[in-house]
Amino acid sequence: MRDETPTPVDEGAPPGAPQAARGAPAPAEAQGASQAARGASAPAEARAARGAPAPAEAQGASLADRIGMVVGGQFVNSLIVLVQGVVVVRLLGKSEYGVLAFVTMLFMTGRDLAQLYLPESFLYFAPRLTRPELKGLVRQSLLLLLGLGALSALVFAAFALAPGVFLDGRADVTHLLLLTGLMSVIAFPASLFGPLFIATNNHRKSAGVALIVTISSAAGAIVPAALGCSIAWIVAAQCAAQALRLWLSYRLYARLFGDVDAAPFPGGVRAQLAYAFPLSVTRFAGLFNQKLDKFVIGLFFSAGLYAEFAVGSQELPIVSVLAYSVASTMLPDLVARVEGGPTPAEGKRAAVALWHSGIRKTTLVMLPVAAFLLLFAEPLMRTVYGDDYAGAAVPFRIYSALLPLRVTAYGIMLMAFGKTSMILRVQVLSMVFNTAANLVLLPTIGMVGAPLAAVLTQALGIVVTVAIIARLSGVGLRGVFPWGHYGRTAATALVAAAPLTAFVITGAFDARPALSLTLGAPLYVAVYLVAARITGVLAPEDRAFVARWLRLEPLRSRHG
Image (cartoon, rainbow, N blue to C red; front, side, top):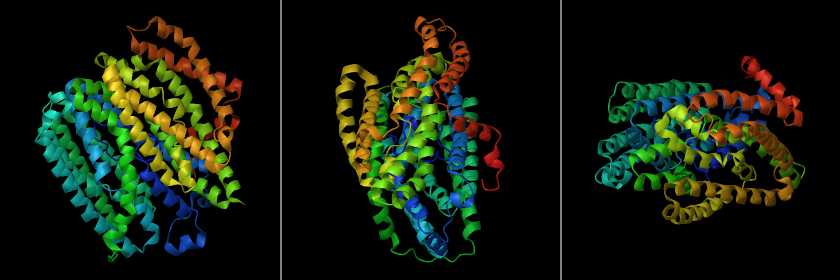
């Protein structure tokens, strides 16, 4: 199940990585976020005793404004990565991009698995430690991550001995795999500092480092591609970007902790791994479901076909950023509702009501986006990536068919209820179903079987999770989801799409895909907004919220 984890955009994501690749990392991160959220709901005197920051509400920032700030920051980073990806696709040959995308996918999968959840463990341990103990934990984690990076490099070196097993044996990836191993050695220790800065309330510094690294990573991909260099130079440039990330992060860490003498972390390595390793098991289950389709395509199909799949399996930043950022920003408030109710049952119902408010907001955007993308998938692929990638519209449409369900991170409610073990159970069920679906669909319908299996797997996971939430909250299936608002919004999105359907079906703009997008997008938005106002889907408070952000009022506030 791919949508369980609200997660920040990766700093300096390599150029071949599809934007979130239609999914988010496994819910291991979510469990750590749940622990952090429960710390945020602790009594004020306890927070003060351990030096933890006060909740954002106490500092004057509303929940809506916090969501807007998080979404805005992550959207900028995601947009840079997306533009970088488009430019690189345009500059490289199809097979070259397929090889680069596959190697990047291997790196990101190895990174997410091999780090054993050590960086994210800082979100749990930091509020409980003194500064000397925290510095001791940093030193311990750096050594562990350096060792794990070296082990990952050895695995990539072993892969390099048998490159013919990848991409149908038609591409030589030996030197790229060796460079990817080197990047792991650098990137693993560097990944520690983002969670550290967040845990110590240095969000802006963390965001600044992330932005610098994202821009340098984009330049390291675009410049070699524009100069006609081989993709090995692009991978080498990503190694340099990760080295920059490590250097900048360590310098900032040294400034923050330079006057602190390190003390041993209580419990040592065993205590840290006792917390992190079980979460890594959960992460493995999520990554299996998230990456299986990509491994299948990478093993049995050519680099050119993998390029089409990589392009078609990516998503717009608004999809991954909006739903997950809204959900993750709400998590402390959901936990507070659950634990602050007069009775456990009333607390859970209050949390579900707050969860619905977030779903209503994201539904207003996600459902019309889904309708438009399903309708204009092929013109979009041809306009953005070129006519050579018209075939990418097939996986893109398959994945886009799931967007109407991706209006929230459903596992967020299980985290708020303290039932994170349920997420692992759903993931294991999804693993079994995903494997069976691939075994049945791939021999039957070919390459499209992999994305279809992935979509069916995620749909199954969402249905099961919603049923669990309904049972745990006691609200039943009728009360677990804002069905009425969702139905009205879906109907409004379909009505707005109706006038454009005829043009797409008749193929009136097949010869000019860019023109169809240029005319279709503003027309669709205009019709949708008018229809939404007539049906009452777009409430006055929603229009007021958008107007405030267009005027940048929350960013000018001294509390923002």
